[in-house]
Amino acid sequence: MNADSLLVQSALRKTTRRLIPFLFVLYIAAWLDRVNVGFAALQMNAELNFSAEAFGFGSGIFFLGYCLFEVPSNFLLHRIGARIWIARIMISWGLVAAAMAFVRTPLSFYALRFLLGVAEAGFFPGVIYYLSLWFPSADRARAIATFMLAIPVAGLLGGPLSGTLLGLDGVYGLGGWQWLFLLEGLPSVALGLWVLVYLTNGPQDARWLTPSERSALARRLTGEQRAIVAAHDIRPIAVLKDPTVWHLGSIFFLANLGFYAYSIWSPQIIKTFVGTGNWIVGLITGAISAVVVVVMLLNSAHSDRSGERKLHVAIPLFVMACGFGAAATFGASTLAVVSLALVPIGMGAAYGPFWSMPTTFLAGRAAAGGIAMIATIVNLSGFLGPSLVGWLKGRSGGYLTGLWLLGAASLAAAGVTLALGRRTQEPGKSGA
Image 1 (cartoon, rainbow, N blue to C red):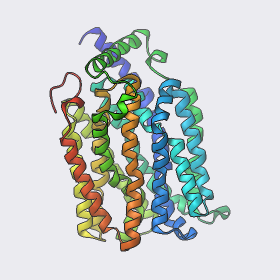
Image 2 (image 1 turned 120 degrees about the horizontal axis):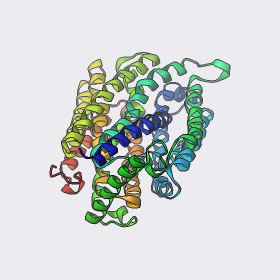
Image 3 (image 1 turned 60 degrees about the vertical axis):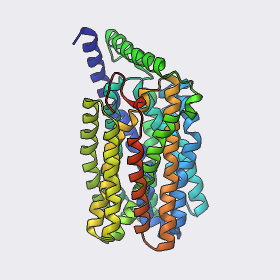
Image 4 (image 1 turned 120 degrees about the vertical axis):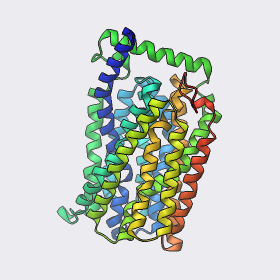
């Protein structure tokens, strides 16, 4: 290993220690504020007399607001810089998330969920783009997967926490679900203010790296970006209709139909299937999330070592499909809950390898727009999945039809992944 490579590795170790834990905490806050409505529903729906259809639509409308503003938000992040724009995102979504405590009617529920999506738009694709400014392609899947461990960790912590906060029902005249929204929303505002102090826009501003480390890392990243541009010279606007961008978006669109439905409805499904209390439901979802953490790390590390992405996405999505199918087969039982655990396990394992793909053929402003476009396509399923489950439950009285449909969508996602072309390979790799 030459001196330049040693400097790059030293810079990456410092970057990982400095950025990943902080971004990880930010995403835990984002995920809790996005899906805690699933736990709030255990009390809120009965207190406010919300039907399954109203709850499903209101939960999903978050993603319409998110999708409408995702691409422009990421372009603004590229122009303004991550520090200011991510701080703005967090402060605004924290305030809206806390305001959810004052929902009284379906219309106010829809309005605040939509505004929450508008406020949070651009955070996730912005961070994925931001990580591409720091990590070379060979190290990116692990960096992304470590950041995205926040999703299962949010489940690991948020499940028991949400169950506990529901126990505050009646304290100072507020419902437990109101305390849940307040005490999980306001910390995001504080974190947003801390972003302004802590975050660095790019390696060129990183005073915690030595000048030689900054230079070596910049040379490595610039060389990769030039190779990408030379091989795939895509204009920032043209990327919005690029076939590979839409192909990648379609994969996680299909997969996230199931995953977002799981994220929103799983507390109610688990409670129905095993007939337990709110706090135990939180413990069950937390235990499932602990397994997801391990699987995410293992699959992403193996994907980086091998340089292979496609199978590291397709196989986990097949596992996810099996989880839905088995849960529908077993019906309302403990075995169904165990089977349902395969849904977040499969989805979690696919995250790192999948989100490392866009930056193998996109760079600069095109990468910002392309990642945001993929995330926009993906998040449309966040509206359809929860809404579909609510609509089907309202008509059938149960969850089984929805589980079968979501399993079929996950299976289709695995198949579409296998059809990916060579364009999404790592630079210099000859694998799939």
